[in-house]
Image 1 (cartoon, rainbow, N blue to C red):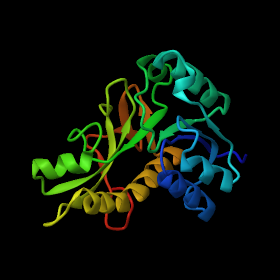
Image 2: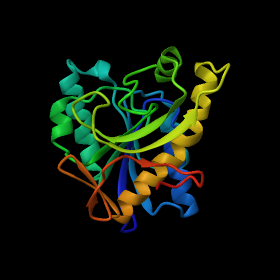
Image 3: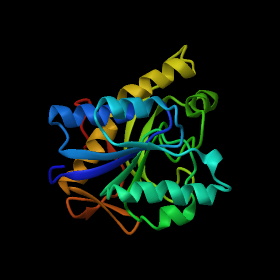
Image 4: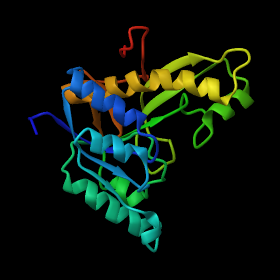
Length: 220
């Protein structure tokens, strides 16, 4: 592995966000290396994407453990063996126990499909439609013990259009999730963005508000 930012990617589902990172690294857009892909779903398509890209991948089933805490301890022990600089939750659908989060401060980020703090948890596109908002989107945030409650690093916004349903709105959000994820990881890898003590710093200064993804698909 070259001397670049070492990423561990956690995924439960299709792995499209993982693929965005793989593609950005392959194209040279992102100077990083994925040192492991980890899933709580042994049949997750994300694992197939990892194998196809020649990346180390591992799945642990929660059913094999007596408790959530026991599963998380084993799962993150496997993650730690890869010695990542940054742990990226990209479609990882399990709550992470406080003990595992607190043991890795400022080293875990999550991509969430809403403009946090609005619409935490699941079914965010339906939540946005039910609330009648005019704007929706995605957020990258620091993982804390609070569900989707960590400091927000950056966001990408999309309009909610007349006639939208959860599927059409979700597709529009997915169109901005990938550049949002890649650019946050890029800035962290370059050292321009840093996480320290629950605060987010950009170019050495505390960030007063989340960065926003521009029309050029870069953060400003």
